[in-house]
Image (cartoon, rainbow, N blue to C red; front, side, top):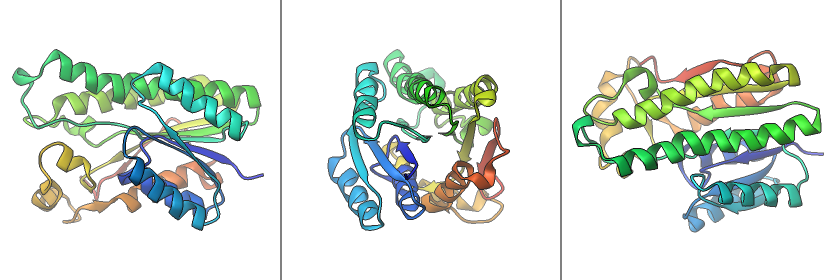
Length: 246
């Protein structure tokens, strides 16, 4: 029986790269996305071609009812969950803290923090009930260390919360053989920059990276899938930078 992996935010970027790699490594997949149906179906097609069974699970992770619906589909189709890549997240237009609004902050934290915690909670409930352990990898950001002043301080703060949550949850569930880690991507070429109003940001800032280049979604995904694998069986509570040294 193949292990079952749920990936949130799987229609593009790092989530999509994780799905495509996981399909080649023997996972069956549940792919969550909010609104990009065409993107999710394209990813699913690639994964099925690589031999994976794929379940599409639309739903906004800022909505607890939508999270419940995603897990209901996973339960009904697979009846188990072995791994979660907690990837769904948003950024907003670049802004200084003095210009941040309550509505922007609520959206940022509802999706990036509260949604991620609730998604992880449901994974833990199932993994504990199964009694065979499991893996959760939360997608953080190097912004959690860098602060992102004059750009996305709210986004950086939301990812710092994910780092703290990762460590706390890992301590709670380690004795259940549930490993919980985070990955902090650095300057990665994904659609996220365009959503923040700076489509050329990765190229513009690449000179600041010690390796003098931007990273790819696939490079981040490789690190995440390693953490999900038995090769990382004694790793938990850790946060891995995938930043080119930044």
